[in-house]
Length: 315
Image (cartoon, rainbow, N blue to C red; front, side):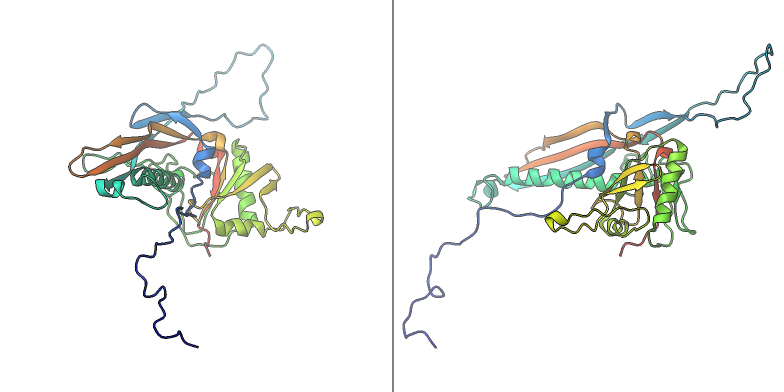
């Protein structure tokens, strides 16, 4: 079949209005599980410091002779730890013309881009908190950086034979990544036991999507729920019931896939020297400029309360 001669169709027409929906769709994830679960503190300097301590080991020989002179126990000093604040930002520049024209999906380009960049800034912060970064004091030509979670956890970690923990467990040096190996339940149980022995009560296992699925495949000691009444088959583990308590298994898109973190969230905080703010930058032409900024640090109140399985396969 063919069109009759001189048929006028949409291919020839001029002036047909565009059919552009007045909505912008985005599926980019914005959840920040670690930052949302950690405590929030206000810090007052670019180097924030705190102290950690522990108790002496329990003794089974603590018996004193009646009437004897007291033996004076030695006192152990606290440990002073610190972390630098890191300035993190996103910027927006929009021409006056772009702000003025009629746009689909948003009335103001400036407002839309500011909202978008604020979400991107939160994602950057979450990723950096959970990476393997040593703290950097910074200077006039080098940006300050806070030590991330990978530079603190050392007491209770399970890692490859050729990997190594941070030497000082105070954020000053990063861990050395080793040869990757598959996550097993025995590895996870080893770390959970270690954190409990140290005095922690971990409540969260934070992993990337691949190792979340690995944990869902564990069979030892797991319970599968029969949901026959609603014809649903549950194949995931969202709560891991260990010998030392229940831990929520939290997938995090921004954590390192090679790490499975076992966290007592009572001992982690994010300290803000400057909370999320927006500045209007100087106007130098026909455009509007904005800077979104936060200055913050990671506070590891006592790394021994948490742990991790490191050097894991990611696919």
